[in-house]
Amino acid sequence: MIVIFNLKLLKFLAFLLEFVWISFEWIEIECFRLTDGVSR
Image (cartoon, rainbow, N blue to C red):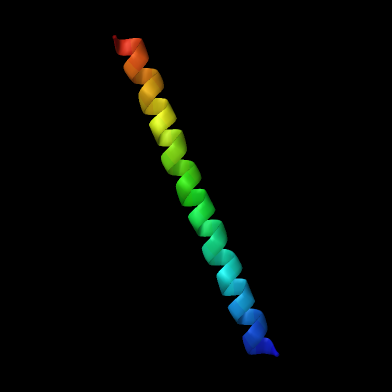
């Protein structure tokens, strides 16, 4: 029972981490585009 719960928790954490990573990459790209547009 506890092992199954831990596996679900790990999968959930992995999903969250992936989501946050993608969000950070997206924000970075958006910021880069904005600063690139300003510098021109």
